Length: 520
Image 1 (cartoon, rainbow, N blue to C red):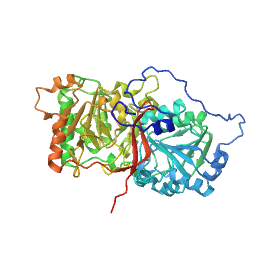
Image 2: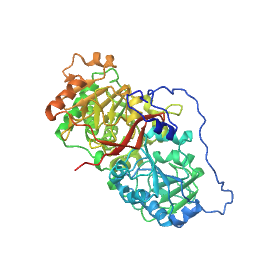
Image 3: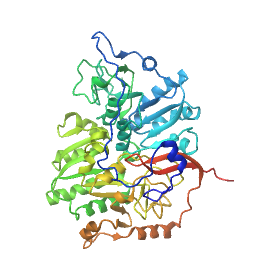
Image 4: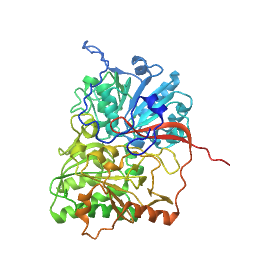
């Protein structure tokens, strides 16, 4: 069955998952539902201790067994130790058929690949997967399905009961003996700034385990996760390496091509109707997206305009502008570098929000709905303005949706930055390998060869028509790319569906098939 972005979704996948095809970004507006519930073991005896000596012991106390769903968060990104620590203990116990529900998985979790291959892990739910886990899934080694959701979609799945978490593991830099935990306070310097991804897990999981390297006196406040949602606390030697948070896409760029696109994006924004005092802004994690903030600051100073709220994942550039007085408040869901982690410790106008507050499409109003601008990256953009941020040009899962579909749906002006060519592969193409964000929510595409505006947005077209910006059509960008390197051959996939791309509302945006082995 074809969905609203023209992707064919196999009937067997619809039956297997019980899901519907994607019918549009806002079709479930005001559709009522009953929130899920969870099992609670009340702590009434004041002599009872939540502190457990080891991961192995806490797994036994939680009743670990085959077929459970376990959750993790990724605030430490490539520096995370908790997933591997817990899964190694589980593997030694011989537990099988687990579902991992993580806010994201990356190269730091490469050691769990053998557990995918031997059936310890049979299903994965995540914003996305990078590294060897993505390769394993794309090559058909995961026995079940990989379900990839945006950050808001993950919260929705848990809140509605579509995903029920048996045990949630929360890596916390500090905690007290009752489980009040914070994203700062580690005696080992292992702070991560915020714990917003883990908030929904703590609220809805049957068992919640805080894993920390620093036990502090009660009460550890203000707590990101409070004791009323925590069952056990385990102290370990180390939970993560914060120096590896700013890795990969989260690093600032010195690439001249990316800097050019960043300048185009900032120059474009100042000609649109929402560029006025107090606008609300988010930039993505990519180098060009981060650089666009610095170029935007030049306009802010010149025009005597300031940003009311900067939100989402936060990096040093945003903090510096806030100190300068160019930003009023920072609403933080994830810290991308040490500077932002240090800033939230002392800056009262830099505050933590949960992923539900940030992006959940099924709550009563999320921060993303107040965005004026969001600047995002892409692996591919097609001529319908659909975007792919998960599957590489070789068909291998290599990225994550993150907040991409959430912010695109919420912002008044969604700007996607993508180079015309990724290596020798056109990033602007006739049809994306996989659709992760629908074109109806993407307004502008900025490349190093020009800027294309979605024809749906005649208001934006009119706003910039008399500027010197290099405006062109998306088809012209595609044609330029194809002339430079030729029309790419489509990726060869096998028949088996190894993963699905969920839309924010839980319907199926696209499927990911097993990569076809090259014939020699």
